[in-house]
Image (tube, rainbow over all chains, first blue to last red; front, side):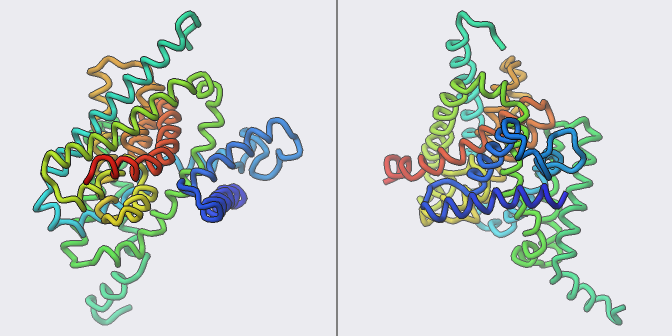
Length: 132
Length: 240
């Protein structure tokens, strides 16, 4: 557990260092995600990496298990930021209805546009091939 | 023991222990209710935890800063959880690789739609410029959106609220919306909700279907990249 969490934190730390160091416009944890993905893929190719938290999904204490634990309650992690709404009650009293309706309309439009584009693109590309 | 219950409250209300416990306990109850209703969209655990904790803070006259002193330990885990998305991505790499092109096209179209739609609607509603700027990055995960908002000299704490509200609405509406539109491709459904409603949408997608969850996680990470590039451009073109 500790080794797996350390590996995840280390990936994030390297991500933050890279982002700050190179002044990249992306968040550090996204670089950390790419790094962990590369490590997992490299483990399958190079046996020397398959140790500790990377020894493989069938072992007891590995990064796969720690990650599943973190992701199982992803919604919990948004609550502290969400409770920040108590600081904005005066602004919401003034513009709250408008803001809610705008956000709702925007999220529905975004959902439909994204799903339609995805389906259209995968249909165009899969023409002649077997659908997965 | 304290000789006076009030001094005990003063002590506890300033300690991280109380607010961390309140956050976890409220979520545990909200999540149990959500499970008991077979994950009904309206029993969204984030929505109900938010208003219960918010009401508790208002009733006890506790400031958000004090609350966040305890809750920050939970908030911090947003970063490691983003890194952890590498694992479902790795485990489903074949499904993902097969859909890489539709994903990239949907990413660009969806990301632009998310920003442009909210800015145009807010302008049409005549909202002040500072609020429009704060709403623009609402479809990406909280940490990233607050960073974008800060670089635009908008209000990061309003952005955080817009982000969470967007996530909750997206998570509530996605299942009925996609069912009504008769969309059965869980890759597409997951990708859409991850893009439009970041981590809260992704959490919802994992509840519904594992493949949907993976695609939602990818959409959320990619959108964090694309939106941080697009919002400054969109703002210069759309807001004068």
